[in-house]
Amino acid sequence: MVGELIELPDGSLQGPAGVVYRRTPERVSRRAGRELVRAGAPVVTNVYPEGLRWFAGTEALDAWNDIAPRLVAGRPPAVRDLQWTGRVWRAANGDPLLRFEGQH
Image (cartoon, rainbow, N blue to C red; front, side, top):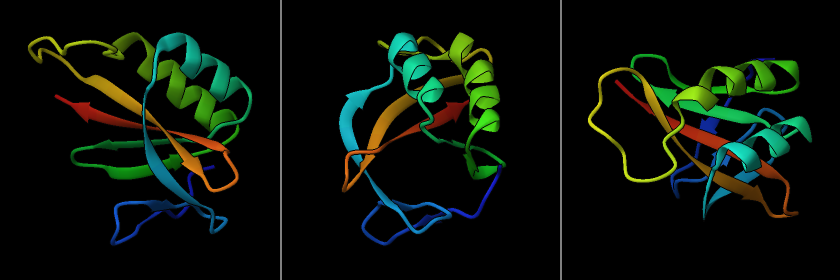
């Protein structure tokens, strides 16, 4: 489900259910991303011109399947096509969210 997402003044994200997520230093690897999405973590993407988009459930898995082949986990190469970098964000209770920034 694509829902309403709010970027708060302090840089945190508020999901459709009102849960607030804050950035962590943890980068998303393919293995960790796959495990977290399969466990139910929502996915947020940010790429021009779409801006921030929220995906949950099967739509989060679909978004992950589109992102995973283009995920950059180390030093980014020169941009030739759409590529993604990702971080794990967490709610106060520890629930994860995967946020991906796209460049093209």
